Length: 401
Image 1 (cartoon, rainbow, N blue to C red):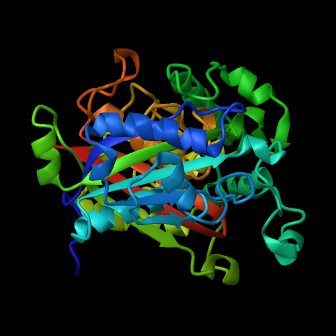
Image 2: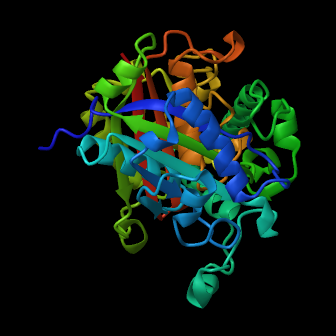
């Protein structure tokens, strides 16, 4: 079996814009904002970059179908630039491509950048049907993202015989926790604290998901520069290295929507990607070894189900862990340490790198004490893109020496 890329690639620098309603900025402006911070953090010059990967999802309001806008916006020195896209795992795919280029020895210094301008789409939520063809529009004419993911709650409740009022208690706690964490982060989109009563009394979007159970639609960009550990150590002698421990992606084969053995209460892809990532990283007991996480909380119920799909909470046991504060900021494995998609925001093409940025900043102890995770050594990020029954899951694990 192949050994993967564990400890073969180091993160030299990262940058992230403020997420939110960035009406005053173009996608190119956001790319520059994230890149400037990333380049300064890396301590190199643009001429040192040998390749770049751009992640962006919606063509209509971003940079089109090509990768060239990244090169021209950042004035890169005529290096190869490639655009990637894979639903909500788009930015993680850009990061994975950059890391593989370094691990393969093709390049020594590679940029990964993800960007999305969702607010300019003219939709209150995600753009629907545009650019996806008549067939896709007709197939999904009566589907909404909240409606599809709300079905997870009823399926989960039925499978584990947990009353819906208890499910609502748990997802309300998830939302309150994320709002509390986001309130501490100056780059987050939604920074207001909420109470569990406010969450439960909010307008219903798709039962049992209310307004505060749905993530924000945002503009933003995030970037990373990766290199070999040897080069990183030579450039940053007085700083601990942050290395990539695992990068795994799993895409649906179609079995969930084709056969009857999928119960609708979990994500097949997340379970597979997580198991592969732990094997690549050499993690035997994720509940004890993972120190913090950023997961794809597009909706609060998605986060709850993901705790089990990541093999951290026991099957049917996420409710108890959530209500006991296991995933709170001061809990055993803090989750959504910067507010998550729910409150930091979710510009699709940038989210994966933003999550890694959150872990990176924590590992280097660059965050204020009020939101710092003590003695953090390993951080996990998780993306989920597509539909509950047909999706892509991406897992990254990074750690410091």
